[in-house]
Image (cartoon, rainbow over all chains, first blue to last red; front, side, top):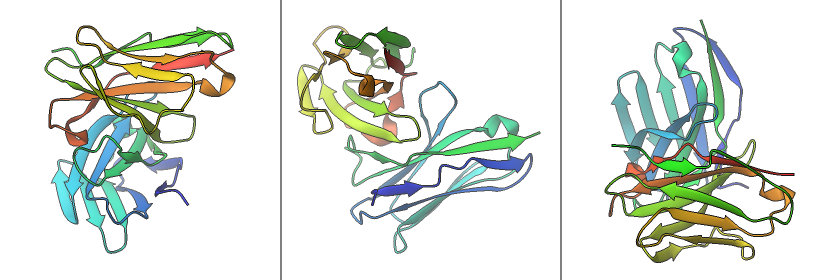
Length: 112
Length: 115
């Protein structure tokens, strides 16, 4: 069993839809949870990070962490074609976190 | 302020040759991390370096792979005697001291193809 599981998709939605991206994990030591966006042929770009459980909102993006269920989510409201990318969840036990564990990524397509 | 610079962007090597991948961290960043990304897989940690020090190389294959971050110049990931299975995208990230992964910025990656 992988430490972090993420559905690879692809996920295809119409413009304006609410997108829900999810990851599950098995290591209860994880404290920091991150979401990266990666455009084709580009490096990952950090979107948001959350410490421990709870929600965090940044514009159209909301990250949720449920440590009791070992489940994290990223919601994208009013999705745009420019949101089409691969979204990677990542997590680590601390911010020294060079051993960040990444999910395989979910490919998202937002159709105009 | 330039971002993390990796070169070359694309590298083709024949089996048995050596591959050298370079990473210049962002200005002011002293920590460098190397990751490998295989198709349909997530980024896999390889090595964490600070200037002139390897802090953690637990993700590096035991043979043929090495990394350095000299006092002057870029960080280098070296793969000797490449094999087809080394074909992947290699990313480096950098962060300021104490910044950790929540302040790490990634480069564009080097795509290595072994033929």
